[in-house]
Image (cartoon, rainbow, N blue to C red; front, side, top):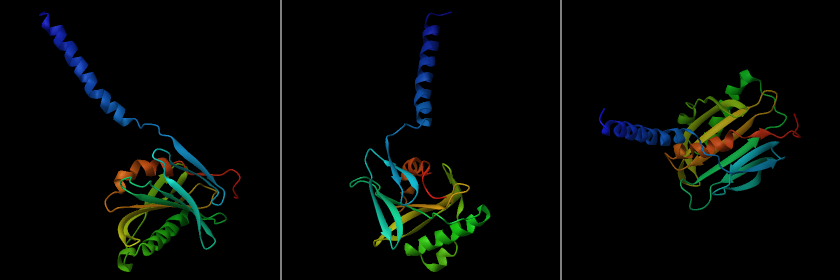
Length: 195
């Protein structure tokens, strides 16, 4: 056996190891620090990005509290999320799709989607953490600007419905998939919340 052959085999093994290491690392998601907000007005625990930090605010639309989360200035793409919950409302699992369809179409109306397009919006099954439900996407308008919107409504068995939505620039929702995953999969009902 030539003395070059073992060196060649070792070099190829090293290169193969270097080639697969980044691929394996890319499959593992890096842990990131998150803010954990306990929001008694919604009966929920909500996680938000810490670096860079997203701003939060509890607002009221009439008597209904909403938890608003916005990406920091100069971040791209800019985005805003909102969370609402409906303590006391009981929705059977077989009714949830109809409720989600109604919520999705109402949200589309709020984003100025034409009535003909709203009628064709149908939610698809989705799950985020302990919440099972339905979600849908559409393009609309917010504050005079074109946006893409994703809306989810779901619940944990025996609990009330939770609605989450996000909007951003057209075509940029895929760029926020990790922020959505980190935030939405960690939504939890507070133990002290009403059943």
